[in-house]
Image (cartoon, rainbow, N blue to C red; front, top):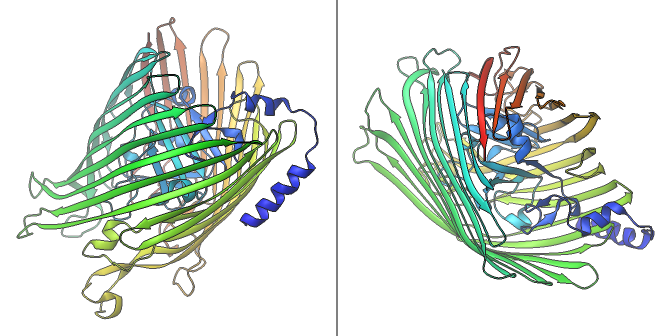
Amino acid sequence: MCKYLFLIGSSLVLAQPAWADTAADELLAGTRPIIVTATGMPLEQDRTGQPVSVIGEEEIRTIQGPDITRVLRRLPGVTVTRNGPLGGFTGVRVRGAASERLLVLVDGVRVSDVASPAGGFDFGNVMSGGLDSIELLRGSNSVVWGSDAIGGVMNLATRVEDGASASVEYGGDDQLTTQAGLGHVGEKLTAGINAGYVDAKGFSSAAGGSEKDGFRQFHLSARGKYALTDEFALTANASYAKGKLDIDGYPAPFYSFADTKERQDTRQLSGRLGAEYGNDWLDLRGGFSLSDTKRDMFDEAVSRKPNYRTDGRSERAELFGRVRLPSDFRLDFGADKEWIGYAAHDLSPWATPPGITRGKADIASAHALIGYYGTRLTLSAGARLDDHSRFGHAWTFGANGSYAIAPDWRLRASYGEGFKAPSLFQLLSDYGNATLRPERSKAYDLGLEYGHAGEELFIALTAFRHDSRDLIDYVSCWGMSDGICTNRPFGTYDNIGKARAEGVELEVRAPLAKGLSAEASYSYVKATDRTPGGFNQGNDLARRPRHAATFALDWDSPFGLALGADIRVLGRSFDDGGNFTRLGAHALGDIRASYPLNETIELFGRVENVWNEHYQTAAGYNTQGRAAYLGARLKM
């Protein structure tokens, strides 16, 4: 595939006519939205052949509320599942890839929970307050980002206010949300801090339950940059969240999913210290980051002390760079070293003595991409080598290109490989298998765009295919004691799976009249199990609806009132790989309004799930019915 993209790009270089393109001039002038997920360095969104979508601060604020899933569902190729009310485990799938195969960054820091069974990230602990933008690259991109970037890469950027702001809202299931920010944006110093609190009484996680499962969380983020000279700056950022979530379980004597007195406490900390250097031909970004996630599980029917605890920690030193070469060529490169460790403590009363499982690993990596960034043609290709202390090394390759075929029309294509290292739990726990290989993927897509990201009129159509192999899954050892089940009486993990996801994505943003705009996204994703001889071969992967669409309409009236509506439609899917339990299709509608009383105070409100749709994204778990919210926002 890399060879074919290179040949196509070479022919386009020879074939491009000599007429000027105003849009290309704007790109060169740096007026397009900037992204980081494509190369690890700042890049105009239109200068990559990879599919990248960005939702900015204004759109996040317009959607309202702390629930980040209401923002994420506007992104093409994205579906979300949640176990119960706000704060419950929330998995985000991109183009049919499992949620743990999406690499998530907060201000450039990897925040996956390395102590979780599959090493993924729980979006249930992320609130939209304090976010400046959400950037999503769809498809594999391990060339730049290494492990976990199989389904895509998402970067959540926190906001820096130029002044002060605060907001409060109340409604729904007795839910109170507050948010405040303070910052300064200047020539030398840009710095800000945001804090928020959510207290929701909630509803029963179990579909058949009646006890309310509440969620309480405090979150804090800070980010700053200080320019020592015109070429050199210091940077720092940190994020912290502490939450308490009531959950349901499987109580005796029937051991079916029902109300229980269980609770999960989560503490997440991430941060980075770094420096940036840039001149006419060289840019460098380096730093040291850490991410730490601690979870305590409680069953208050047994004890007020935690019965299980996990702690996952990642420390990372990294360097990204770019060299501007003659004739519109660039070299993007990077190197990093990551140290990860986890600990799991069984603190239950019947554990004598308490059981402790620990493990650690380190990964050293280097990558390089050579790219041509001409007026109308861009073409980039690169490779990466990762050396893992537990399973050895892994090579990944990728290439992408785009070509302005006419004013405002752009053709793009990309090929990317991805890999995901086995989690420490999968390697080292009581169920672990030290011989596991990394999961691998290959992703292809071809797209056509009209207009440019960030402009009023934008249309993008993309076709894609994503093949995965060596997928890791749990293997039951019931009745077996030899082979892979030796000394694993309950089960273990093994590389047993293959899968394919293929489909199309459509994005549209358009002005309909003065002050009236619309946007829509639609995805068709056929994600199937392709494990040779497997019991589920040919079945749809669990919780992957083939059809997903979001439609949004916004009107800014001449007298200040703003009105909007969103409709989210999901097709049917299955809750299990055997395709025995069906999740029905559903449509959700939200309406919202805001009105500025003056330049400082704005009132806002919304109604979610307007027609009180009863639905599930995970079998057995409740979802929110109709709920109304009112709030006020202060900006100084």
